[in-house]
Length: 219
Image 1 (spheres, rainbow, N blue to C red):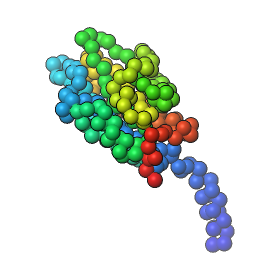
Image 2: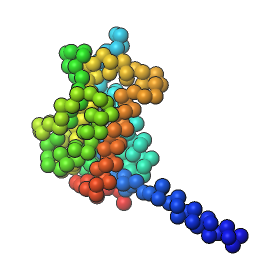
Image 3: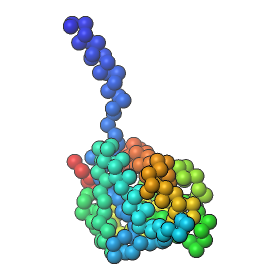
Image 4: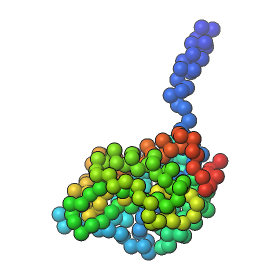
């Protein structure tokens, strides 16, 4: 028994680093699923005659991302689907969020157009976006239209570091069909890759000790 105890202590010391605390512990990430509710469904794609609403895709990505954040010890706060963008930001701020991700998917009259683009407004948005956007580009493998400073969407309001993502075009036939595959239970889809990329970006951002801002986060 005397030799067993020191051995267990040594094993414990070796194993402990594997379970190092996630940088998301205690952080509140506000997750906005673009459109929905009184704001309508956004863009609409189609796969073999079956319509695919952007709002539904936004919600699916948010749900999967929230699961990942919560499992890592953070809180993925689902911003209320209010009709006013400024009200959505106010809701995130009232929940003491550290950062905000507004999840969108683009639309076009062309069913072949497809690329990844993100939008920011404030300086702290850009500092956040440089960790998020490249992860999306890498994961999805689409043309990169970059991070655009355009005073667009929810990033216009409040002081939270935020990003509005347009990961791909839901009006692209392949993307619309891919979402139906996700609903059908396919394990590796754009929804999965996008949620994982956003999660990886959050890990990178908070690992860099920037810590977010605009909210104290959960304590």
